[in-house]
Amino acid sequence: MSAPRTPRIAPSLLSADFADLAGAIRAAEEGRADALHLDVMDGHFVPNISFGPAVVKAVRSRTRLPLDVHLMIAEPERYLESFAKAGGDTLVLHVESQGNITALVRRVRDLGAHPGIAISPDTPLERIAPLIPEVDEVIVMSVYPGFSGQSFLPQALVRLGAVRKSLDRLARSVDLSVDGGVTLETAPGARGAGADFFVCGNSVYAKGQSPQENLRAMRNVLDSTPVGPPSDPPH
Image 1 (tube, rainbow, N blue to C red):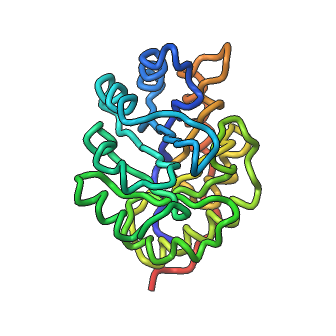
Image 2: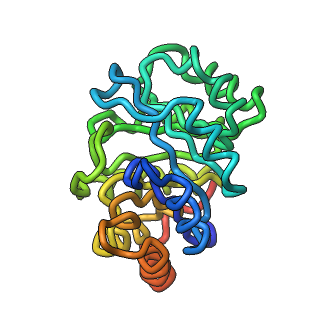
């Protein structure tokens, strides 16, 4: 296995107070977040509706943190340019979306953004295998996409471990992200399975608690968690 990468944390603004997104961004910066995660939902690919390019642009104007834009939308091809122009640093496509995903991943890079791919819990991992050489981030969903506040699905640990092995075999420096139900209790297992990028929603923006302190607590847990047994060596 390649040397473990320093764990990075991206608070998910879907769990923040929408009436005070500027305050949520400021709290993330003060808590030394590594990026911000924005869930884009269209009401078709998932039943919920959330952010559009205008919100991404507004967040971009408030921070220099990288913006990890997670496109949970049925027809990403229609919106890639808009989200890139709005300031998304990474545009993550779902492998289950419509269109030629390989071509869309390459389009993201042509637009000057980092391409990523996400996979839902019930989708076979074989679907992302051809895409791994093309992307800069792989999100393994540990909940079903569409709503915040769900519980972590334990089978995500096996899936994270399998993707970690694939990345090590290819010797690729790619963010292996885990998204959904990431808490102080579930994060160590994901870290041990090989994740190095942690999307944290309610565990950061819990009501009545300080996002700054929540971020510090999460970082302490991740920094003290060893990565699991070595994967197959690259070949």
